[in-house]
Image 1 (cartoon, one colour):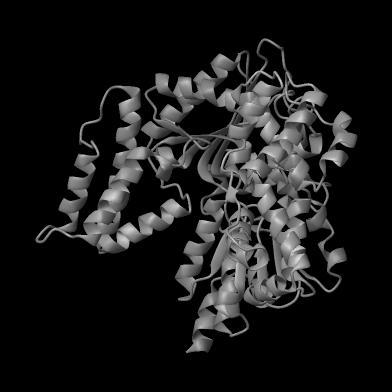
Image 2 (tube, one colour):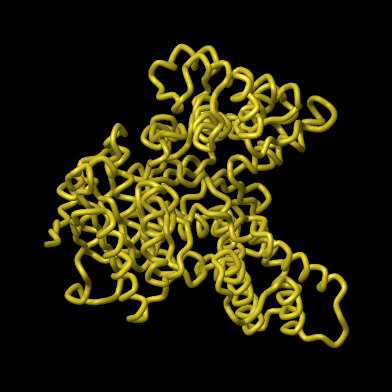
Length: 564
């Protein structure tokens, strides 16, 4: 029976993926290009390890960088193996272990987590006569995260501050005083931030043999996704978890390092085989996502870059003659550019393309605001990828709580469909869409939830099972699909894909962004290109600053078309 299960797990992989999945012990590095089945390979490798008896399910820890990615890993693993596998982000893993071990080491309860740094920073800004704006608070928060993630003390940071760009309107001395005051305020209030949780846990493991023994025995097999984005602080925690063992599987792609501003570094990926001399290295280069033309441009862009993979088109249906080749259309102004993009999307929707299969990507959030206005002028519903998580919306929380209460105390004689309808009506949902924008947004959220539940009821699932699934999605911050065009910065689009992608603002000064590291901006362009499955359309405009087309167009060999 076990042999048949193992065969079934492995037969779903191509030869490159299978080779990686069969290597279960020792340090393993999987270099996985965009669209090459990275998550499939990782989950099947873990499942293969469990089915062969090499791994105990409760000794596996899979780390991702986002709750969404961790949720996806958990969902896919649940389809492959019956046992529950621990899949977490760095922060959630550190917090849960810290809360568990704190009493053993120090007695009492662990400090509470400071969910938002801005609460304390607003107070400190007022004290030091710094204007309190959302942008200032965001930038100071980012600077705190960058300092801690790079393992810099305040003294070390002070010595290097001349090399940093301080938040607008904040002097260097003011910034140092705010950063120092922030640490003191946390101590006074007995709270810690997310970066503290990683540093504290790493310190406890290294200095407390009891804790080290417990945690290293509990999680013997580590898998770390997006290894190209590991920071020095995260790497320190990884080394503490491992101790003198080397059962780590790192998965990443140097061409997709786009979070250096948050202390992510390629260093640990590029030097993995130096850190672990006996490491086995596997490459996944068969791209199952994009058309050959899209892949060709992506390869052109990254050719000769450090550790760049050479993607190969694999398994995408359709004749090349029926696939639109990517090109960049050049406009005289941003308004004509965004209007043209909205018009093209309108044509796609009229032609039968689903709104959820279309995305507009941009380098900055400001660009997305202009696109949103153009889409709404065409009557096209859209959502921003960086907006509030679906399951954090008040109306969704209310409905799930209502359904949970009905499951606990069911009404006799009521069908599941009736129960769902009653709870949705109590939350204000009606079949007819309202006219006001605010009410329409709420209505659309409830409509999406209704569709989500009805789809599962029609598949034969019972309400208790559906409510449990919704609760898991809520906990893991998953986003359900909805019939809206997605607007996203390229950074927020990492790890996602769409049938059709419109990349706007492909101009010098925006992509690459003025003053930014060109190599990282090139990788950002690569990430944007490789989000597209079938259709990739790029655009740019001269605008008031008479900008030139991006240099990356020439590097990727994407033709430029001038609008007359």
